[in-house]
Image 1 (cartoon, rainbow, N blue to C red):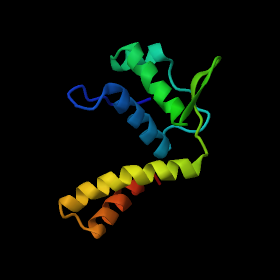
Image 2: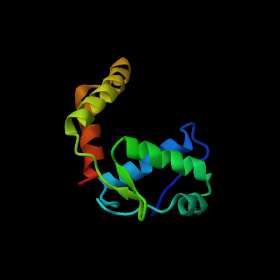
Image 3: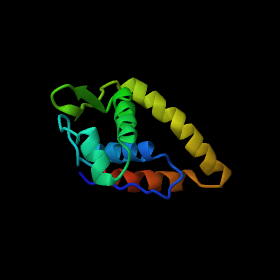
Image 4: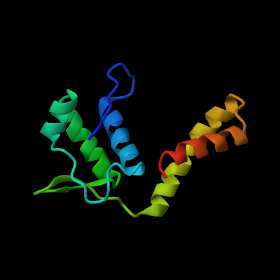
Length: 122
């Protein structure tokens, strides 16, 4: 498992970890049913506190990306609740698009960015 944490970033370490795992799922590096490393293993391998990894796994579980199995630990298990996810994306996109609008970024430029990003996940 390749996780890249930027210790100089303003973004919290647990959020970086969550985002790396979500991007790994989207890019098909992680698949439904794949086990993630144990909290201790992942903390040791990337050099962060076990509580940070545990918090990331908890957030991923709450958001429907993983489930916790007593025997296997954290396992990729995607939540199929599409409508809830679409509503969450809409709220996040409203803020992002408002920021872009304030900076005079056109709709066409946004579409190009979306296409560029989605190509990474196909």
